Image (cartoon, rainbow, N blue to C red):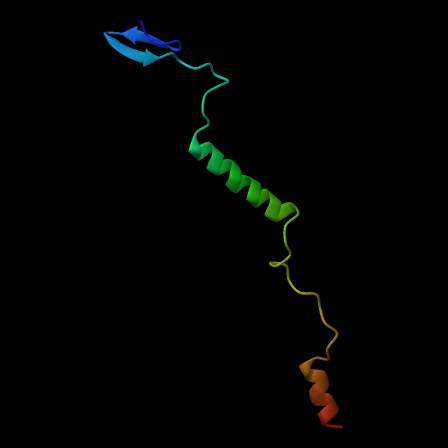
Length: 70
């Protein structure tokens, strides 16, 4: 007689099928969820390393040339 949670199929002991709730999540699904979460976090509330810097109020090259020719 097989142990609890097992049954006999063609003279072999097999494990009973699991319910749909207890099925293991595929590693591909877990990886896709992690990548998607990181992508969303980067776009919505992530760092500003990719943002363009604020405009500085330094004089332009033409202003420097005009001041030198006075």
